Length: 557
Image (cartoon, rainbow, N blue to C red; front, top):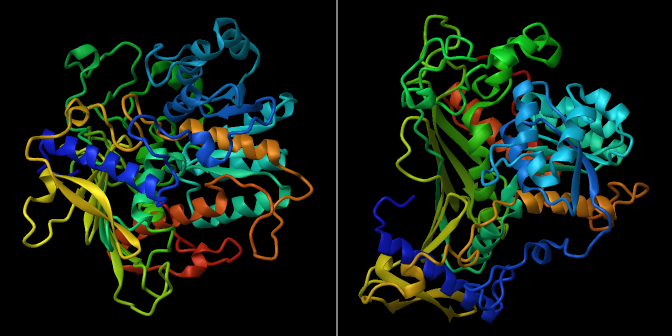
């Protein structure tokens, strides 16, 4: 994220974050960690409020067994969520979700988690290609987890809720804002829980980062820089060899580049789906397999990647509604899906995007303090490119008194702004916390002798805890979903109290929260397509309003 940070400076930034967290906890400014957090991570269940056992695990079906479905299977806790049925139309996905990719991979497979016998039982008796058939046959089913292509989120979620099942659907919530509003409407009509998988709402790393921001340590935030860059320009080399013709089991033409979204089309999938793709909502087998590369089915880089960063930034800013967005999207490297002769991994979406949002600052009329300063604006820039992976993905939050860097959902670093005439620059300075007035602020402590041993050894990944991997929030979002189901009272549903708050416990990222994130990503797409600045209408964010930014927009590739 920060181009000029040395390894020592990164270690110092992590140690800064740990020291600030410990000091904030001791002073009562931080709720997500306790004192000594550098040595032991906070317990997510305690922080998010699902610590108490709610009895037997919720019986769930996983609908969509591709890349994201495999991650969700890998990350779920069978003590809270028991996956009893699977649904996918691709033979390759059906086999991979059962067998997995190895015991140490992010997709270990059903057999690794539940055992070989259970895996074969699910394969033979509880594997489906049709959602409605599954809903009819699986009598014990309480809920579903949907990890399907974006354009299928609304119809499948609605079918499941009307069948009496609670729904956890992957992000982005839906392909259009109107679809989001319809999903919320059906959830309320049926009294079913609708949760959306923006996992940063369940990441302790982001909870810690938000606590630091809310404590005022960074001062007045004026700019956030977010990005997700990757390089898909390398030649596609199956088995390490540059072979692009006549690869066994691969339909031609094969990919030209090593592109994570331009998957090779397997002969087994083509044979199984060549006469059926239309009944599943696709125009071709290619669109079915490579759905992320088509506007109609995927929504492009903003829907798939940018939505993560926009979600994080809006959390940092207190979920305030944006003021405007403008941007540029290009397809400058890959080919055009409409040109049959163009072999350059053709697609219908942009391969690079750069957008700029304006959010209200704390003293803006639409900001947290409901002030009067219309010039108090926070600028958020977001970029996603497909031809250069020099920087890791993440967010840099820049305030008047300090900078926070969050990288790859795993590291958090803090740097104090150097005060005039007070010596050492921030990037070679450790930070402690002092109280200025009633607010905490970073205080410098010289470190010309280098970082402390723990930081130098790389033992502190940031305030999420020392040592082991930092959870990305998948397990927590599923556990929270199950907790809400066990507490849910059908006869109460979505009733509100006199303060206009829901009576029942809803997931942290329920439909109305997730719809706001969808509006940000989908409106950014419109701004790039029109090459114009778009001002946000607050009515777009009201689930009971018919107003939507993308009404009448046809999604063409």
